[in-house]
Image (tube, rainbow, N blue to C red):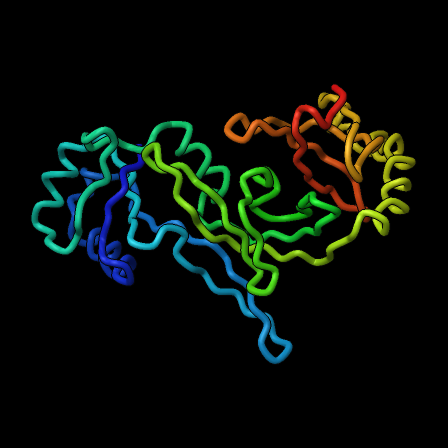
Length: 246
């Protein structure tokens, strides 16, 4: 179970290292700091940096919170273990599973890429592939997206890496979207792994008439995730239930 330790911003890595060295290992299974990839270009050279997903927070995977609390008493530089309803509790199972899906086993949110067609964000690679509906804001200049993540029942705004390669206006998009739908049967024939997924048709907006494979539902956002093959790549797009014919 994942508990969250609040510390001074900027000291997260120092404190996490110290905890790993001096905290009784029977108190925890893992201590980690969720990170995200940020990519920047300077003088034509792209660099990759890893930044804290939740500044001031250290995550502790523990199955004995009483032993964890006792062990932490000798450390004076942390503020508190986060509480839910005035009680120290782990983040709930849904929140933990969501973060695991977003970060992966190494606790790093990988950089995502995609494009925009009309008012739809289309993701072709990266951690955001299955979480497009939770994007709240996109900063194309800094190659970042704002995402709301639930922690201990509260929405926490975080930044993750996202590059929008191209932005297409609706008129420009209509021609290649027509080709996308023409290739749908061929695409499905070449992908037997998609046979078990339901085919849906978009009924509104610039994607009207386009078919795709229903890959999942985001209950928190009330949206559906649809796989469409564009530019020869798997592309994830979210739609509302009123935009799809099931």
